[in-house]
Amino acid sequence: MTSDPPPLPPLSLPASPAAVTWSDPTRAAAFAAWLAEVAPRHGLLPATLRPASADASFRRYLRADARSGSALVIMDAPPPQEDVRPFVQVAALIAAAGLHAPAILEVDAEHGFLLLGDLGGDLYLPALQACQAGGDANRADALMRDAIVALVAWQRGVPCDALPPYDDALLRRELALFPEWCVVRHCGVTWTTAETATWTAACDLLVAAALAQPKVAVHRDWMPRNLMIASPNPGILDFQDAACGPIAYDLASLLRDAFLSWDEEQELDWAIRYWQAARQAGLAVPADFGELWRDVEWIGLQRHLKVLGIFCRLKHRDGKPAYSEDLPRFFAYAHKVATRYSPLRPLARLLEPLMGAVRIDAFH
Image 1 (tube, rainbow, N blue to C red):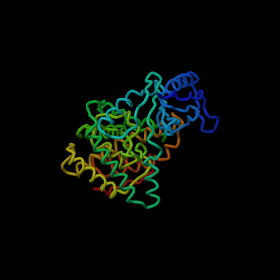
Image 2: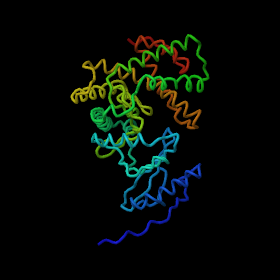
Image 3: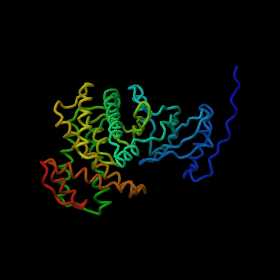
Image 4: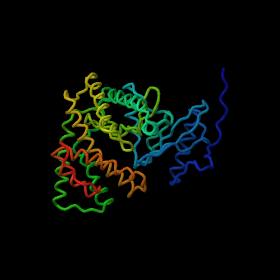
């Protein structure tokens, strides 16, 4: 017969620069009550509570040690800005597909608190940045190949029909972020009637191309910042916005990332490896790789325009200016693709005054 474990210490937060702070006293009280309830069930040590990370949404993540010597992560997702239920749903789909995501241990959907398993602190992004800085192409290739294998497993194993549709309305709402936040708010530009017509025509082309692609489960941010170096590799994060949409979307997210860039020869190498693995897995990728690459570029352009709008909104609405440092990367992605394809060249000319570019007609 075993004795009961010693009682947990009373809830307290460390008085240090890493202390967890709350802007809403009511929410702080709700969290304290919830933590006091769940901590004994999982051996959590509340005095070790500390910030883990934040992201571009209203969510943040906290970490606390457990008596076992491991750590657990808490998602703080304040309603009504955030809803934890999609995260819980998609986590279950990921687990059923045999992929690696944080285990969900406790759910308080009403207040937006989740207790999660901890995948550690080794993100793909800094590892790949270190590979680029140090010239370690072999390690970068190994990590990206793992991400591609997992992406194929995600697309094959996560049921598309269990997710909301990545439909015409959603695609257009995302594109609308660009003129509202990047053009008008960030650049201070007002388009003429003709320029607005050019933008509308480009949106019609991009939306039609996206809707014509085969549909699979789309993570919507399958990028190094949301992949963890883990065993099995990779661990998958930030999947709550998954939808049923274009098969090339997540590959575009992986290859043309928000925070690091690869030369096109390397992008093509990884894209071909994805294409071969996807065909072997029975996914509905085009028989011609050139068609897949066009799909990657076009849906990538839709994504990059959306991200330009989001990053500007983060700066001007949400007080997070650091994201705007990567605007030139996304303008370069968008301009490169829009210049390459004849139907999109009017869009390229529309982008140029915003990015200080000189028009280039050298692409086929």
